[in-house]
Length: 573
Image (cartoon, rainbow, N blue to C red; front, side, top):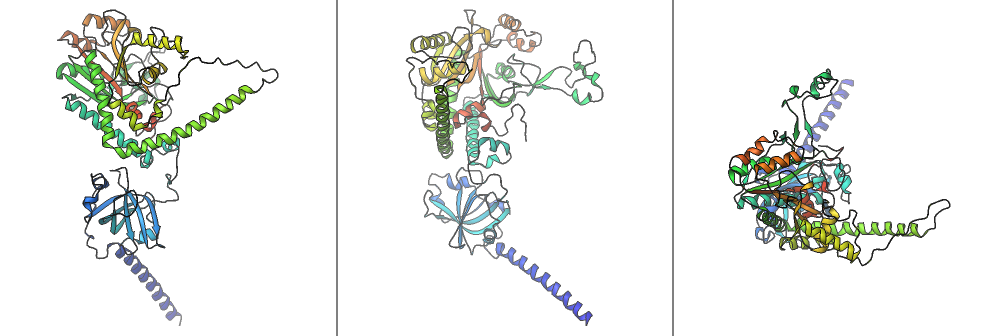
C-alpha cells in the first residue's frame, strides 16, 4: 500500500511538472504563434524619426507595416483591459510614437502581467494607421509585441513627475532619458553638426589638436597636471622630491621627462596648421583646474577654435558673427519640437523663479520695516536709484524668438574705449550702479557686457581693441602701444560668448610680449619659428561650446548641457 501511495505521489509530481512546462510553452506561443512576422528581427526595424519627421507627419506611411524598437514612456490601458496605448521612443525623435495594442495581439500578456512598464524595452510590429486621437496624425496598430527588457516601475528613478535638475545630475546614467536632457542633447547635436557644416562649407580643414601639452596657452596657470610620478612614489617619496632642501620635483623620472598638463586650448597648435593649410579649425575637449562652482564654469568643456591665415581682425569678427548666426538658425530648423519644449520649460521655470524672488523681496521689505532690536545697529537706508530706466529682460522674449532675432540681426561693433565711455555715461546720466566702476583699463565684467548687449544695443555686440594689460601675449599689439587687436562677441543674457584676436605676426614684438608676460621665449621657440619662416597676418577665435549650447537651450546652469559635467568635487561616470 505504501509503495502504491509513493507511486501516485511521483506521478502527481510529474503531472504538475508537465502542466508547468505546458503553461510556459503556451506563454511563449502567445508571443510567436503563427504570425506573418515571427521571422522579423530587430534588423528590420524602422526608427521613430523616419516615421514622424516626414513632412506629412507619417500620413504617407499609412497601410505600411513597420517594426519599431524602443523604450516605453507611458502605458495606458482601457476597455477594462481590452486594449492599451503605448508611447514608444527610440531616441531618434523627440516625440514618442503611439502604439495601439488589443488583447488578441500576440504579446499582450506582457501588458496584462505588467511586464511592459515605463522604461521597459519592446519591439513592436504593426501597421501604420490614421489616428483618431488629438495631437497626432498616425499611430501603429500592433500585430505583435515583443518584450526585450523589463524595468521595475516601482524602483525606476525617473517616475512620471517633475524632477529637480540637481536630482537628475545625481542619476547621470539615467538623466538622458528625461525629456529635458533629451531635448538639450538633440540641440547640442545640431550645434555640433552645424559647426562642422559651417567650416567645411568654407573649406576649413578640421585639425585634431593634442590634449596633453607642455604649454599654457592662456598664461593663467590653472591647469591639470599629468604625471606618473605618484604611482611610483607610494613606497619611495624621494622619487618625486629627491632634494629635501630645495623641494623641487625631479621630472626626469616622469613619463614625459618634463611638466605636462591637460590643455586649456588648442589654439597654438591650430596656428601651426593654419600656417600650412590656410584655414583650419579645432573642436575638442579642454580643461581648466579653476575652483569655480558657478553656473557658467566647468572643469572639462569643449572648444571651437578656428585659425584663419591672411585674415585681419575685421575679417575675424565677420567670421565669428556669421558662425553664430548660422549655427543658431541650423538648430532652430533641425529640431523644432525640441526648441518648442525648451521654450515652454524656460517659461515655466522663470515663472517659478519670479514667485520665489517676490517672496524673498517681500521678506526683505518686511525686515527693513521692522525696528532694530535693542542693542542692534541702525539699519542703513538704501539709496534710491535715480532715473534708471526699466529694460525688458532678454528672457521676457520667448526662446525661439530671441534666437531667431540673433540669427537674423547684424551684430553691433564698438571699441573698448568707446564702450567704457558708454558705461560711464550710463552711470553719470542714469544713476546706474555697477559693482565695478567703469574706468579705462578694467577688464569688462559680465555686468558691463550684458548692459552693452541687452540694454544699450539690444542685440549681439562685438567689443574690440582691448588694453594689452589683461590680454594674452599672442594678441597683435596696435600702433598706440596700449591696446591689442582683441575682440569679444557679447550676447544678451550671457555676456561673452566668443573671444578672439588678430595674432601677433611680428617676431620681435612677439618676443617682447612673451618676456613682458613672464613667459620663457625658449619654451615657445617653435611658436616663434612660425614667424621666422614666412610669417603672415592671421586671426582666430575661441568659443566655449557648452556656453553656446546653454544659450541656445535657455538652460540656466551649464552642467545641464554637457553629458557628463565635471566641476570641483564631481567626476562621476
